[in-house]
Amino acid sequence: MSLPLYREGALETLRGELAGAPSSAGGAAGIVSLAALLAVLGVYFPWRLGFDFMDPFLQAVYAGSAPLFQSRMTLAAFSEDKNRRMLEGWWEPPCPQPGFLMGKIAATAIAGYGGALVLYALSLATLTLAHGNGRLLIPGAAFLIPLLLSGAAFSLFTAHAGALLALRVQTPFEARRSIRMAFAALLAVLLLLGPYAPNPVKGAVSSLFLPETFPWAAVVFSAACLALSGVLWRWCLHRIATARLNAAPLTIS
Image (cartoon, rainbow, N blue to C red; front, side, top):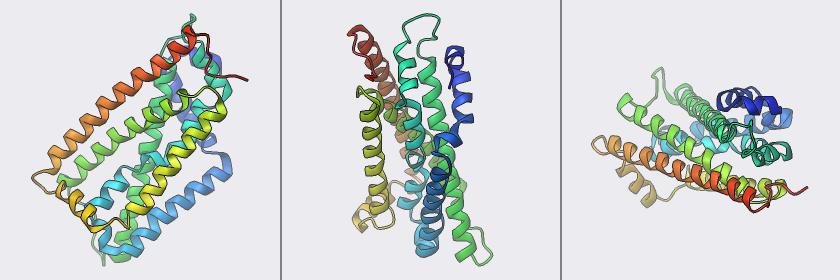
């Protein structure tokens, strides 16, 4: 990303980040790793689990899988030396203040949610082809719509969380390490608790997905994600402002 793009503001930054998403994924090696992730989670697990895949716990895990697709983009957006130096220059005109960060977080949220939708659609397609016997196996609209809206709100929250993880440390190396550890831990939790969650855990989660309770649970969850995103946004702004005032730059080369 060039400095003129940065100076144009949030919308141009968003477009630039999305256009550069394939390269942010890590090139050919990154594409291969994403394909492997989709093959394991989107094909193998639904095929192996069969109708057990329709368990509400697993549906929630897949609808909220945006962080799995955000880690590489977050690394490219906030740990590269060039981008961190641009963030340090916020308070110097003619830079547009927080527009640069806003565009980067929005792009990360959109890319992550797009990946989650692809994974979820692939898993339902695999389930339908392997076990549907001519029937389309998808949740009903009363369940699916609140679930997808909750997934979008969660993607926005995790995009803010990734930005904060990168900005809370001082060097690009620390930023990369912080983000990788967080996303590796999340992946491990999803793999362990997704298909193989204990029955009491599945039961407690399933109670939230009853027809009479799920729409309200989705609203509360989405509102909490949006509120927490606002808090993390302010923390990111405070971190950069503090770094400037204390002459402690985000990047020490």
